[in-house]
Length: 196
Image (cartoon, rainbow, N blue to C red; front, side):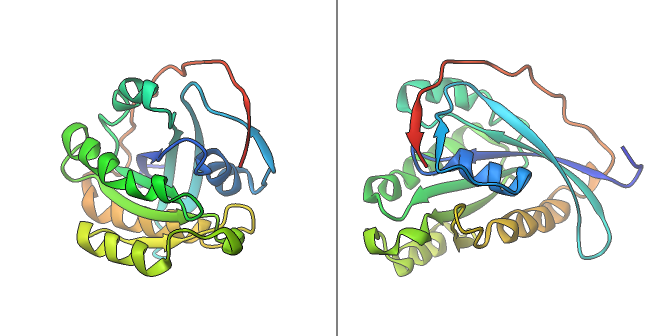
């Protein structure tokens, strides 16, 4: 790791089927799969980027389980997280309604300096929209966090979310340059097919 490289741990949170795995795969691997294997364990990807000021940053991005019955496992990963991408599906109102529950978990379990970004995913499915952009913006304003509408499928605003997050992390955790975050052992679980 270069001496001036910052290293940040990021969690992707949200209900099952909001597209967390597709979002991460689009960002880290530059690809999209129409059908994916649902995450029943915890997995991560590493991504090296360079910010506008030429600051090198390494992101360790954790894809988490969305099902309620696995929330206790997911909470273990909040510790040491610097950033969180909190995703809901614009075509499923219940995933939007559950954002406040996720925020409460973040407040209880994560570092108080953690940077959270709210993402409304699947804007490529405009005909099935159940949550308006205005509703997303209002909730983000109420929570005092940044907001993006995105499409992992069409690669809309995915890079922007992580670039914005990385810029904010460098500001919130200035002494993190060159420090590592201990990698936790990956938990492997079963999988089942789901549509992204």
